[in-house]
Image (cartoon, helix red, strand yellow):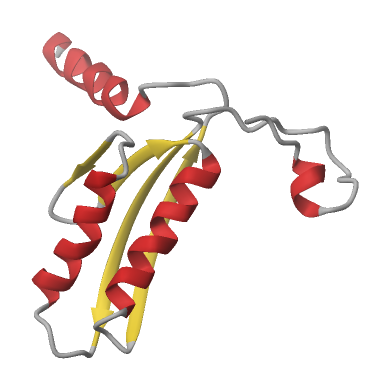
Length: 122
């Protein structure tokens, strides 16, 4: 899906159009349930299950879940994860970091491969 910055904002922007391309975004996000009756692990597991079922490239580590896709798909997934955790927690905190690179695909793995190659050269 191609969208311009102007169409998303509903008015003409002062800067040139930005085109959002498929697989242009990697989001690293962490969701923390605050309060509620379930264990934090069980609440977070429900969100990670949603990520894994999304079909988007993803990985989970000790601090964040990383997901790659187009802007709308990734943001809708993060929203769904927050809402899923909110079903059992009265308050939810989310931290999100975005890497936006139009036209780039597969960066979730190629960025790590590039680092590993650089390490081998040391």
